[in-house]
Image (cartoon, rainbow, N blue to C red; front, side):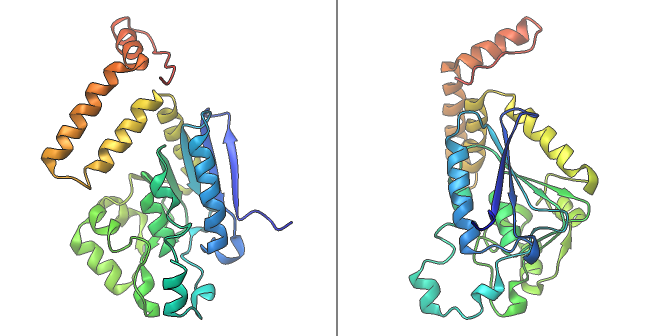
Length: 261
């Protein structure tokens, strides 16, 4: 049997966290249909797993994912990509995951790698990370959200510069622009990411899901609509056992024991 293109580990420390690794090291974890099909199945399985509350996605020290597999795409025709619904099929599974997704980025996150990271809810980058949308340098454009998610994250000016020049930008630039949550030393990346994942996983799962859903709604609605949605979701938490336990624990000055319902 061929080696898995995506590896999965359900961690016990921290609890309720799953770790996914891209596993094509010989090609810098370049994304292709086979990898993304595996990834889709893994993400859907973990999203449905009651023992998993947070999902971390990473690559290796050299590359998170150095883009889509150009060698695989080089001979594609318009008919090939249009008829096969290239990228839309398999590649966007992260969009439908309800649980928090954290991208732990070390090394290169270019093209599709950068775009996949942007599908995640939080990006934490090692200080050696390099991001970029270099599609313009090979005669094409981003096709997995680079012209759409990037300006929403960093604004029009930065997105235009990075997509039109194709230049790589550092983790530090990405942090200043608002693309990544924070930058940490490369040798501390996974320690930091797993601590963050563990903290999120320790909270009430339905409350966590509501936070993700309401923040994402901010990019799809007007402010008035978003505020109304937030208010209703806030009201909805008062039907949760965890809301009762959390507030009671606060009043009693003790740690809450969430039951995730």
